Image 1: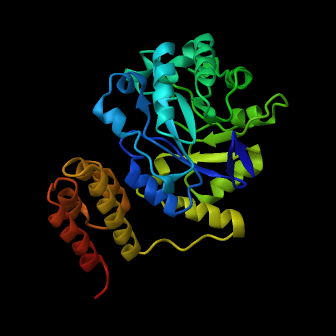
Image 2: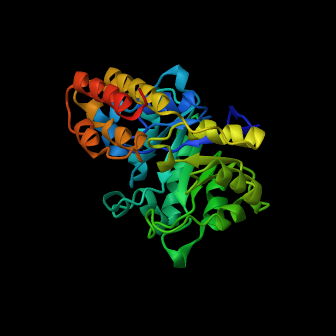
Length: 327
């Protein structure tokens, strides 16, 4: 078992990474169906919560069947982050996660997200203030460092543990890398092997197959794996990994019928949660990825990602089956 505060997770837990415009309730629902052990909201700006911004408040809507679930916050001001954490706590998540890893320029250049890697004392001060302000477990997600000359995650991890975080997720890239190149898991392993570290260490970055997941657990000794971009259009990766960890065998690929059924289920959930047109807009990237690799798919794909008519989208999903399945 892996324990984060009062949250009990199975051995070698699998986490769905928080992703903007991706990890909404409809996608979290699908990932839970395939065995994600813990999920997170889309990341939420602290100032958005404080000023009651509609989009930010909407992200606080949680359901019991998603548990355990974390709310992830980002911001560059300590007082604002503390106030946002208190607001988030009222939504009754299972934990509060602090985003010190987002590399997007408009966030990092303000000193939030991965921008906090340029100001470690403030990162530590902000984390302590949030830990002291809420009763829920507080966790952190961050990167190896700002750039290749400042990969100081081993030291950062100790400092964050010392002020009371209950788990640490590390993305195996620097902020300067963004999402380019390969994730470097060696430093994640060093953090885990550091005898001073007692909290769970969760690795993140480039886990796209069950084999890579098992290698990460075996080679680096981490407590859990967080998966982000590889889940988009492939939420069943959680089931594939869990089956491989348990049996050493690979599951057969999903059939086209199963993918269409899954896309339809997520589409219905998206409309239920976000309505028209937002629920349609936010399904478009999923539609593109669910059916990636189908030959001569461009025409149907273009209609799927431009239509605003739910009935037309339903018919396009039917068309995929009649076009690509043998009669």
